[in-house]
Image (tube, helix red, strand yellow):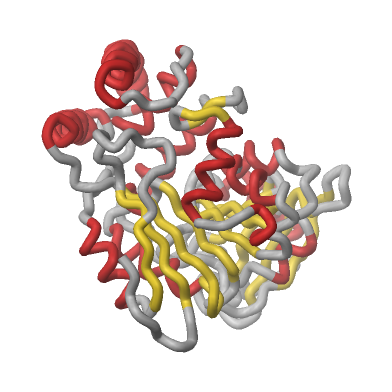
Length: 363
């Protein structure tokens, strides 16, 4: 954890300042392990493997950290680790995505596209030029393996990658040399950042995997500064054969996501073979997409993403537009996917701009 991050993060319970007690530094002089202390709530949030864990509830993973750092923790009598209720479904969702990202390497391809294509897509989605990002503070909400946070940093912007899963650990290790990239683990429903902190808040393909997409959306919406931009991509209400495909996969998801780990791994392996074959032919003959072909590891990754998360809600454009309006965004723009063929009914890509002076809605 880099020192600069202390100016950005806060206690997720009271949004008050945190102070850090360093237990161990890494070779760069950053915090490898430590305690983040909220003096108002008398709470301790751990930092380990270089990543702050800012959940409003207790993680089972903390037991090893506590056992290894009893002396340091004992120096703060009266302080305790968070013990709030676990957000509905987050334990299952965290396991699913942690395994998904743990099996994924930085191999030049993600979500159908090469890294160069993804850079183009990111700028297209937020409707900005590279020069527009310079000096901005940007939150990648649901950052996975941290690729977009790294892309952001190459444009002289500062990026915070925020995720429920352990993908932030591999992301921290991969991009530890990037001085303007940070990673935080926590819950969308109690984000550890003050309102009006970020110039851009970006979330692609994340919130529909929570128990309640709108509640997640509204929890993150206040983080955008005045004149800042909030972008989300969500599963849409697909039509025709696409809708049938999603109904079928969601029925399978209902079963697969609830299986114990070992049977789930076996089923995912079988589905990866079938899904990979169907996807190749579907994209080749129906979508005419520029997306690349997957190898075995990439197919396994996308299969896990499709079938192991507990939730995968579908939404429609007017519904999501209303959320932006309710959250106080005065400019709303739908942003069709850069690479999609017009025949393909993709998800809902939309951003809103926050302004002190409400303006006319744009569709």
